[in-house]
Length: 73
Image: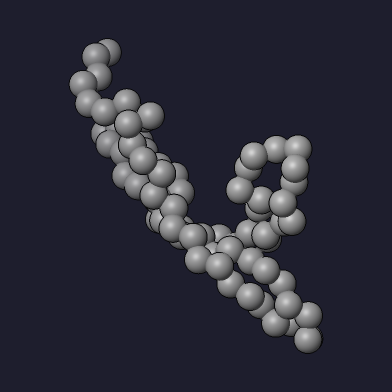
């Protein structure tokens, strides 16, 4: 099977992030609201691919001096 088109590495991440402070019973939680294309589904009848749009919330962690990630999970 031959494939002509962009490689997965050529497709940019399309997740948008917005910081959210959630005040829950007088305790504030620092969160990130994230939304965008989170996956791909494949039609079993013809093999075509379609983007899957979704959203999720992550906690913001304090900076970790031992790694260079963006500080949330």
